[in-house]
Image (cartoon, rainbow over all chains, first blue to last red; front, side, top):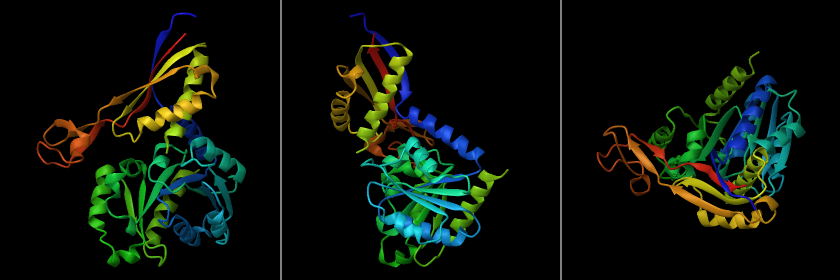
Length: 224
Length: 114
């Protein structure tokens, strides 16, 4: 047995995933396909928001949806009734998030040649998905009114990495002690550039502003 | 429970580093992570013990870690303070214009090998 030597590495644990994500992002850019990573806690209304978004944008853009869950295909089943161009269900096999390699596998399986916009509905979780770059062009998250306005304080990372924050279920604001000014203040404290969209996916309120932002981001990304 | 995913990434990277440097015998792997990185060291250690058994190159490697204290910088009074104790509000001047200076790291610090 030889002499042990110390190798200074000083490298982020996420470096391999970050590198894989950068490669995927560059490929999607070249293919003129915009990938949005949509994150939130379970039950915030991701699937309903997506359904509404498809209703608004489905006739203007070719949209594909990747549903990621630990198990079941109930979300993919719901989305398939919206008339979206493509939908697939990914199972993470118990993992609490998707990483860049898993995202790539999903995109390859779905095929993105004929798509302008792909939305990855990440696993419902405010912690781990924020740590793993999926290779998406932009990140967005949903926070729903019943979850409370203090979440940017408790889960800072996800608010830092998101370009857009959707505040869903504003139709139930009168019944909760949810302070809209506070949530905006807390979110901007974590991320001064975050765009905030208060919506109700149920009533459709606020959906126009959200969809306009998404469309603009996708068009800019896909511009030839 | 992101510790298991983190361990799989660490081990993949250690394998890659070992290959690049033609290392065949790894004695220890040292990680460093910030106090507010969200890692639970005990879970990480358990996941390491379980996963390392499946990877011959690190099967006998010792798992070590160091914790980087979380320190916040205050833009208003230009001073620092411990993040965990005081959170977002500066204890010196009460300002909220404060930023985490360190404490979110998740790094592979070093390996001992030959």
